[in-house]
Image 1 (spheres, rainbow, N blue to C red):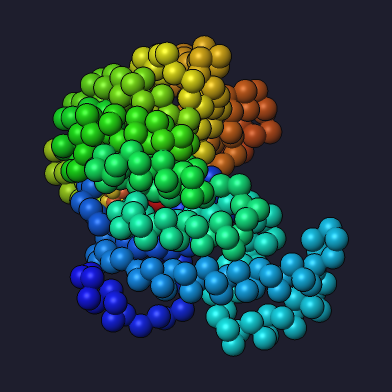
Image 2 (image 1 turned 120 degrees about the vertical axis):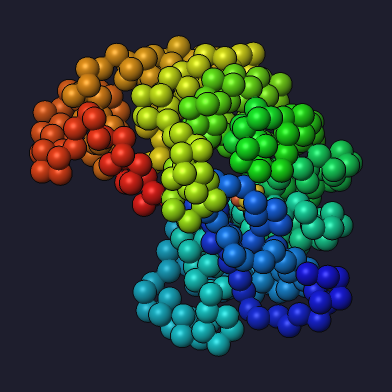
Length: 388
Ligand code: SF4
């Protein structure tokens, strides 16, 4: 969108984008851009076919104002413990529809969740004019002074080009956490999946965020290099993170739904997907190579085989690697039960294999559907597509 078309766009009411990180489930979502300005990563299913645009900053301010109006009304209606009677809520809901119903639902949901955090949408909010971002941040903190966290996704390529002074100003204006999709530290992998950032840029961007005093969350994607680049992917990703020392390393295992570009390479045999056991081996090498950092590992997605690979470096490193080692040491039938049980949400930890009630259910499902150690990875790849 050009500056002039941005100016002439008519306000269409409160907007929300399609996604936010799992850790922002309770946040108020404020959309300051639409879709992804890059939109070329071959593994990414989001925003495909959608055009990127900047929202006029006055429209973002209008969104914030209407949410603020509802929040103030909800606060006035609530009793000392923050509760609102159903009758009051129903009456207000009818009246709120005239103002902006989506904003009312966003405000009511946020109010019910404690109003502690705000997430700026969509994929790369830091791409907007820095002065405009500061205006939005200052308006948010003026309207909601009690908020503890304001967060955004951002691309390394964008952050690397923002001055340190502006990054510090963002932090002072309230932006205190940034999520970056690092995915890999290997230049070969990054080029292959068209990430639009190389290892050097990822490291520079990560270090700039940390130096500005902003919390940093880096997403990594086990399996992204396929069989050919698995080892270099693990080693280079760990090496990049060792140089950044982010606050959080979030694991998001590769899945290949049929509507992403990588699916074509996969079906044509140009990309060989890892089995669960190979992904576990890659993850083990990655975890072992992480060194000298104080990051927290998070595994907050069902795509990941190990929910319990969570903890803080360096104290929990041995426990986390031992989980993966234990899985790799399982006999084929027990490994199958864990793989299938985990993806069905029946098992969450390896120790659940000692629960005959749970393993009995998984065993029965495998028997009824003909799932065996030989075909398990194909069945699971199908299941994982549904989690995206
Ligand atoms: S930058 Fe992020 S949102 Fe954009 S295409 Fe890549 S992974 Fe998807």
